[in-house]
Length: 134
Image (cartoon, rainbow, N blue to C red; front, top):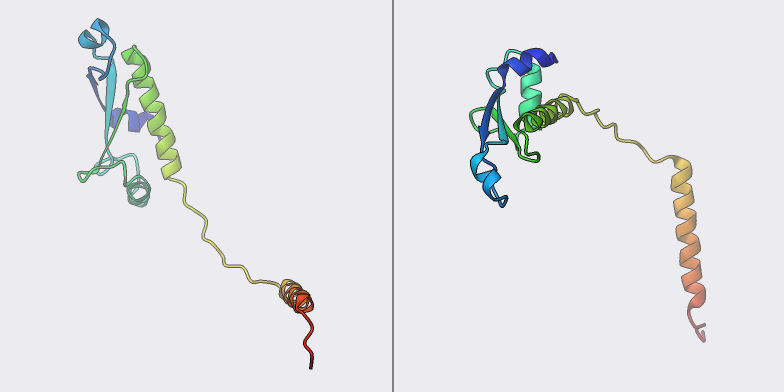
């Protein structure tokens, strides 16, 4: 993953932040929206794109564009840095291939121990009963 080539493919848009904040919020565009077109990106191979599309499917729209935003800070530059950092972290996590699960078998010692405990528990229950008058 080459961060420089990805950074060149990013599209930024500064908009006004929502919510309370008085005059400052109404006149300053400090919220930064980031758009990354994963479908037409040249930074990734086809396998990596498929993996990212699968792992980040809840964040990517139908056109294959990943949209993120940051409005935590009052500074547009800080918000831009934060959203880019979050994007790179998300891409790194999305590129991780999960290990294939190998089903394990129960050992014979564990089977014997389970059956012994079962027998002990059953005899304990039987001994609690009132004796019959046969």
